[in-house]
Length: 290
Image (tube, rainbow, N blue to C red; front, side):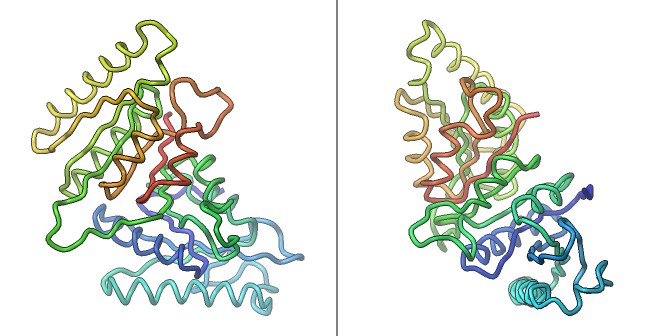
């Protein structure tokens, strides 16, 4: 495993979904002044899993130079690089080429980076599939914030700036999600919409009031620390997934924790995170609490 830093890694396989992810990651790298790294994988029966090669450097395995799958993978990365430089001439992305399963490679390579970005479905996705297996696996297991680019995200010219939406329920993950969402809203100079839904707490006396109080306290601190940020607080009585999807219909990014207060410890993704990853009308960032 390679420890990386000060970069955004984007999974790119040449598909339409990965092109959308790359466009989103370009903008994010520019906002954050971070290096952009394109990652692509290939399979080879003889190659050691996880073997790494740099397209502009020397291959670690001599066989890579003649392997057709590896050569095709290099072409895909070159295509992604050309796309970046067509839109962002001043940006020169790094290229990361690795042999192995895509989800595992992405999770290993993103360790220590600032963010991992993927499309909702890759080149092998089935027609009608809402979320590909690679996107689901990295959202569940990567140790850094993962953004799955789906739906609408380009702001229309002259339109009221679409907000960043965040779901908060008092869990460790949602506190980390709030910090990330505040940073995103500040970088983009847009409002923040914070959503707290209480229906899951209805069966426990007093829990709803406690969650709402924690929510108001957390947002009060955000307002005190970021006086220039316009923050809207929404407390809903409905189901969290419905409340978040409704708010995201007027947002440019939805940020959630990996799992909520009532999720089982062994669960990597909770039911609400899964629902918004499948159905959100805009990109979704999943943040794992520490």
